Image 1 (spheres, helix red, strand yellow):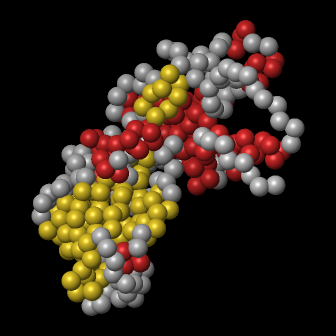
Image 2 (cartoon, rainbow, N blue to C red; image 1 turned 90 degrees about the horizontal axis):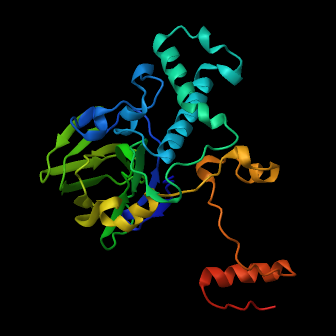
Image 3 (cartoon, rainbow, N blue to C red; image 1 turned 120 degrees about the vertical axis):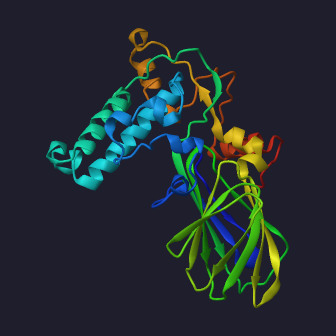
Length: 324
């Protein structure tokens, strides 16, 4: 879910790379009291008894999709723990790891991930239909590249995503050799980490960042209620500065956020009454599967070119004859 793409902007040679992985400190280290910070993350450092669905998602798990999603997360984390410690398929007996938290976490994750091993998904409760997943399960880390030596241009906007994120970080990175100063303010609290020190800027208060040398970085941690920052980027080449808006994607484009969080609940029949072919069709592909639907009246085409043309017509919703 929610995989991010590369977005290229043209302000001072600015580019944004959005992703779902991060390391080191997170927003919870600087911005206490946020809803997502009250729950432990699903990690090897979390004591096993605390890794429970109700804690992880912040509510009771009453959805087949959420239970299956949690099982996939747990299974993925088990793989990460095995790789880091050389256990399981990497040859080492996991019980040789002399750490109680590791053992407790590993046992709990194995219990949560158990359903992933099932070849056939259990029947979904409540039938089919669409749903929206809002569990906070990921760390969102996006990088904002700035090259102050590039030619200044019109105002640009950088969208960051905090959708379903337990913590959101925006890394501002110097991509050139010309020092740049960034001045602005935000409509919510903003934590800033630079040169090993951190500070928190209150909503509406002014902040200033300086990127002095190539590959210099500053990390921004927007609070949950921060939706928009307005800033200017100044350098000796552009002393008046060029405007930049940093905004939360979920607020700026709620339709996109709704699409990103939507999932389709597929009815799955009881496997006991299926023949071999039907069992293969309904084999557990977990959250990547699409729902079965009536095939209607298919049209058989003789050539691969005809099939390609038909796809083009369907995607463009109009006839588009291709030149022979």
